[in-house]
Image 1 (cartoon, rainbow, N blue to C red):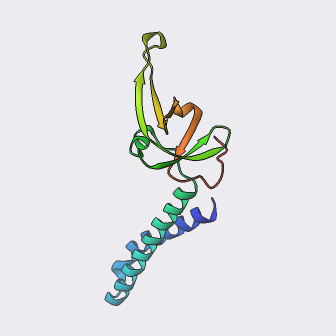
Image 2: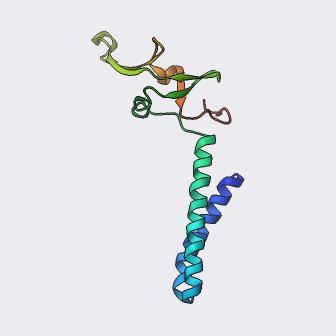
Image 3: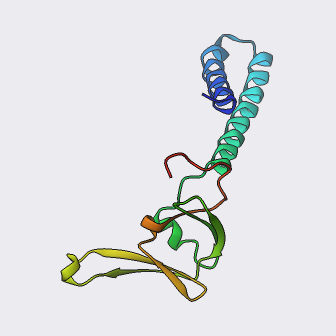
Length: 134
C-alpha cells in the first residue's frame, strides 16, 4: 500500500469513527465534527481523483465512443504513446468465415486502428508510469 492509499484508508476510517462517536458529543463538538468530516470526505475524493489521473484505467469501447472529437492518449502495447483526436468509432461484423466476429474500428485523422484492444490502450490522461501488465 503506497502513501496515497494509506492516507485514503486513514481518512475513510476517520469518517466512520466520526459517525460512531458524534452522538455522544456536545452540540458544539458535533458541529465541529460534522465540519471536519466534510473536509475528510473532500480530501478522500481529491486523493481518489489524483490516483485515477496518475494511473488511469484504459477506456472501454463505450467510453471511447463518448470521446469522439476529443483527445485520447493511445499507448501501444510496446509502451510508446501519442495523443490522438478520435474522429469516429465504428463496429463491424466480419463475414461468417471469421465466425461473425465483431471488431471495433477507431478512426484518427482518416486512418483507423482495427481491433484496437489488441494493438493499443486508450486513456483520458497519459499514465504517469508504464503499467507492468501492459
